[in-house]
Image 1 (cartoon, rainbow, N blue to C red):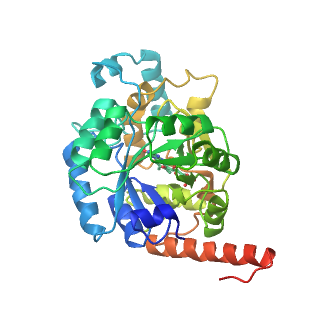
Image 2 (tube, helix red, strand yellow):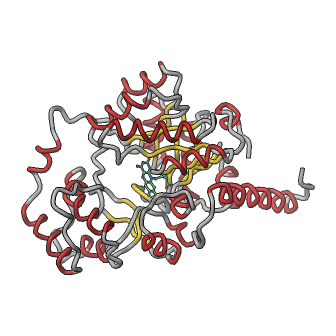
Image 3 (tube, protein in one colour):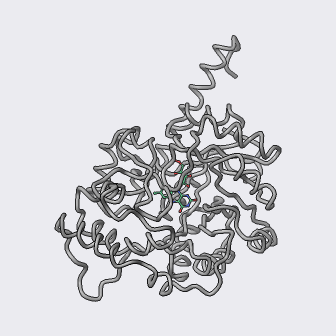
Length: 369
Ligand SMILES: Cc1cc2nc3c(=O)[nH]c(=O)nc-3n(C[C@H](O)[C@H](O)[C@H](O)COP(=O)(O)O)c2cc1C
């Protein structure tokens, strides 16, 4: 699976893996792909530095990248405490009511909420970048829109290309105009924040919209055949997020959640605002149902919703409360049926890719090369 972009980055397979876990990112890179560590959960820059140290050691000299969540629009002088103060009491009451309904225990006295994803506040993301450029990252990706112009310049000054996720051709055009180097066309099927256009329609639209910029196909890719489809649509690589969640290297820290993922079918996800305030695909649970119920108070906009539910999500995860336990994951969860090593997953992807190429060559009346 070699493309111009994979050759430029010095990787064997044009398989890009987004993951919140350093050991998974390193294993993807060691297996010949390109691991990208998600930084959104690191509110403490020192913790990010520790995990980048670990990733760097484990990657064995192979290239890897970092993904931040930085909005293009800056909100001046707003702190996390200011944002906390904007959360209505009715919503706080609703969180307590749902937690009580399912008997979710409190955290211990003084125990901090482990699930804080305030990394999309610009100040937090900028602190992450101060750390990131001390490491030999080979790609900086951004989730929500194009990063601010000075961040793109800073990355370029370090010789680091910048990628950005796009859910429509319009988004992708804006990225190209902002000076982005690689566009990740992420379809509706994908885990995490996602738009409304399926990958089959989106990928060729984005390829045409930003040509000659390289495009990675994302959303709904869990086999080599699906990867081949992405490349057939004009992408220069594939970008996968969900598939790594059930690898042996993943640090989900919840056997119950892993079991839930392995048992889930492709229809068991929902695009809900319950986690962050923006539509994000995740496992459908009693928690997402409660927030999506028209009888409830409804969700708050980003970043209020993320702050509102942070402690509750930590409690649900810590005590593994089955009905409420969830995670962002895409429709491809239906193919995630066994725990395997990252190496085995990458080998499976490349084998499936070869099968697809052989089949298409046969259909086209050519012998496989
Ligand atoms: C658990 C999880 C967390 C995610 N968090 C982020 C994120 O912080 N930043 C980002 O750019 N994309 C994030 N994504 C989206 C992935 O980068 C990727 O585009 C998506 O997973 C691809 O679709 P797939 O889930 O069908 O593989 C996340 C995806 C998952 C499954």
